[in-house]
Every structure is written in structure tokens, then in C-alpha cells.
Length: 94
Image (cartoon, rainbow, N blue to C red; front, side, top):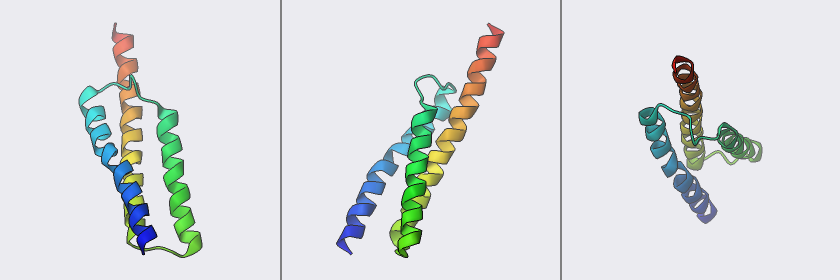
């Protein structure tokens, strides 16, 4: 049980940064300073964590935090892709 608390703590700490990143992506409307490769590595990391939970059969309340974090990272990736498209339009207009 205590290991689950620490795993959840790690996920919550990582997860706290994503709403701020998503908000910044929405407001900035630019992909400058963003690394799509970094975001994809984080996404793959969460997928690995989810897969590990499934393989070990230890699907519990912590699993929900993995899913929430995964969804936030995926949202930020989609915003980064949108913002890249907006950046290209701005460059073409100039």
C-alpha cells in the first residue's frame, strides 16, 4: 500500500505541471520553446507505466492518475501541433 502512495505522489507531482503547460500553450498560440520530442517521450513513458500496471495485474486507484496524466500530455501534444500550424501561417503571412 505505501508504495502506491509514493507512486501516486510521483504521478501527481508530474501531473501538476501539465495544466500549466496546457494553459500556456492555449494562451501563447505558438510552439516556440516547445519540444514535441520531449512531449512524445513523456507520453511513451506514461504508456509504459500503464502497460506495466496492466501486465502486473496491479490496476488500482493509481491507474486513474496515469490515465489523467496521459490525457493531459496528449492534450498538450495536440496544442503543440496546432501551434506549429499557427506559427507556419504567421511566417507565411509575413
